[in-house]
Length: 260
Image 1 (cartoon, rainbow, N blue to C red):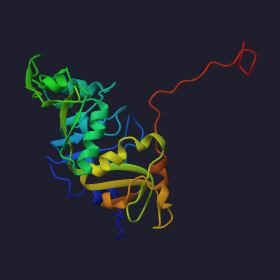
Image 2 (spheres, one colour):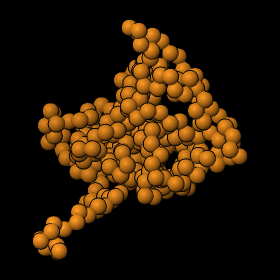
Image 3 (cartoon, one colour):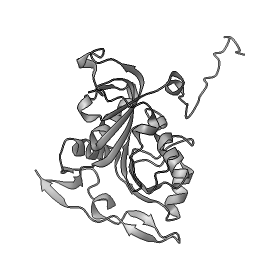
């Protein structure tokens, strides 16, 4: 089945207001920026987003966040996103912060058809006991707090019950993909992208390099095409538009070019 869609706009044309989205990427790595921009231009709002973070440096999900299109975020990292923090503290945004490993496993479990699982992460904290502020009231008080979760003992140790995550759509970015939706991710972009892709009922992948079926060695496939419904081929310019979050420069060696 040829799953290639002509444009990013066509690929997200049926994402309605109020949809839930699993979005791949970590920081600036592996973020489906082209699909996110297409979703912004479409005007979809009141979105529920599941992602490690919510954009950085005014890119990625920060585009939707700044426009007030996101109503709820399930994630594990706020980082230096000041607009995220402002909306959260002002009561404009509902946020469920969970341990990063738990987020990864909740996405994986949802994609694997596992409704829930037990983990030791969060036992003895508000993650298990409840009371984490999901939404503030804008006056310093808590409007919505996290509920307590079931805790059981296995082999003498306590574990907390976490639910698998399924979303209406998933947006991911791959280094290479074929027309059947088989995907290959590059290095650190392989973090949340495969997990997000499995969790979506409709998964859309933007790929930096589109190849024909059979050109990817089966042993090299990171995500089988069965999990992907739509593929968008990026232009060379789109594929090469990658930013650096923190640029560091080492001092010149003493006695070397430019040295003392």
